[in-house]
Image (cartoon, rainbow, N blue to C red; front, side, top):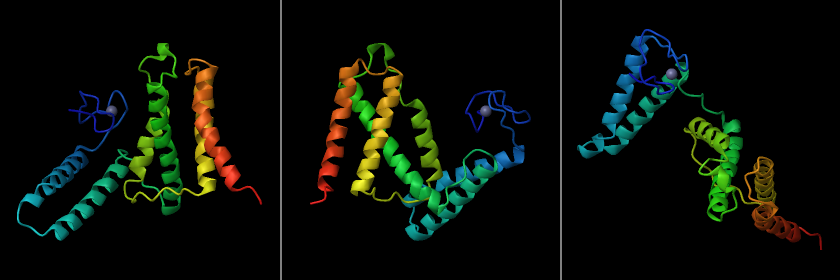
Length: 197
Ligand SMILES: [Zn+2]
C-alpha cells in the first residue's frame, strides 16, 4: 500500500515507512480509511432526495473529525489560530502574486534558457501549500489594498527579484530592470498620492 504521509509505494502496516519513517497503529489507519470513505459517500448524497442542510452539517462534523485525526497522526499540520491566520492570508496572497509574476517573467523570456523548465520558486510553492492546508478552515478574506499594503506587496516582490537575480535566474541586468520597472511605477504612484500638499 501507499504510505499515508509521503505516498511512497510499498508501505507495510507493521513497519515504519522506509522513506519518511511514518508509523501508525493499523487500527487507527482503518479508522482513517472509514472516515475518508464516509466523506466520499456524502458527496454523492446530493443526488438522493435528502435535505442539503443536514448533509452539509454532517460533512462539516466529519471533515473536522478527519482533520483532527490527521493532525494527531502527524499527517497534517495543525490549523492556525485566528491571529496567525490573518497574517498567513497576507503571506499567501503575496506568494500567489509572486507565482503569477514568475509565469509572466518566464513567458516574457526574462529567465536564463539553461534553467529550462526548472521552478525558481519551488520552496515558496511548498510554503504556500503548507499555508493553504493550515488555513483550510478559514474563509479567504478580501486582500486589503490600502497604500501601506500595496507598498508591502511591492517590496515583497522586489526582494524576490533580488533573490532570483542572486541565483542568476535572469538573463541579464536588462531583464531584471524590466521586471523591476512596473513595480517601481506602483511605488512611485503610491508615494505621489501620499505627498503632503
Ligand atoms: Zn512515508
